[in-house]
Length: 264
Image 1 (spheres, rainbow, N blue to C red):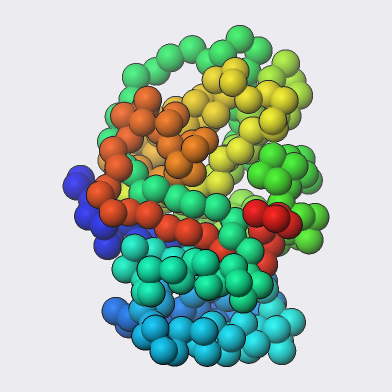
Image 2 (image 1 turned 30 degrees about the vertical axis):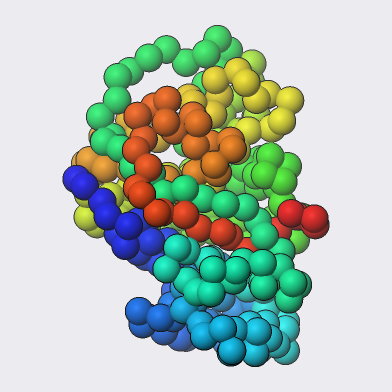
């Protein structure tokens, strides 16, 4: 399956959880999900904003003020369609931290089976593994501990409601948990590989690559023929390229949110 730029961006939109009262704005110039009943970042997101130079700072201030008044977190993704070109810098100046960057990449899920690195095993996350998964995720990214309850609830819901299509994995090295990864299977043939990280002291041992391979094989077994990833240009993208992922020209996002590490 060949994916164009807009198809990759729609994965970010389609993977966002909706609650019964989630308000969705989906226009060519503005994509937003706002959930009055939730203060959590996954329910309150701006995914595209095409703004006039004269109004951009006012609109940013209004959106941030609305969420601050509700005590709600917010995420804001700046894709290559968003305007003005310095929108990410303006969000930073307005006090919304940058979590990181992402390059949109894709490949077939058909991948050769290889042995895991010595001492490494990868397991599905069950209900008894949630605490371990949450702790690892917060340490490996890193993310503040305020992020933990959100991750835990998300993983629990995924396990209890498999129809949502979200799955989670833990990598162990000599029986020590050292990395986590998630993926989302869509009703189409697309799988979204998301949220993989390995503890710093265990990087460079092939564990991240093993998590990538394991998820690709799982996606293939579940009947998905195309996997996409929004890869950090400096960390996960080089690994993804080695595994045959192809960059989609122009597919770049700056991710901002109120749970980003301080100074990010």
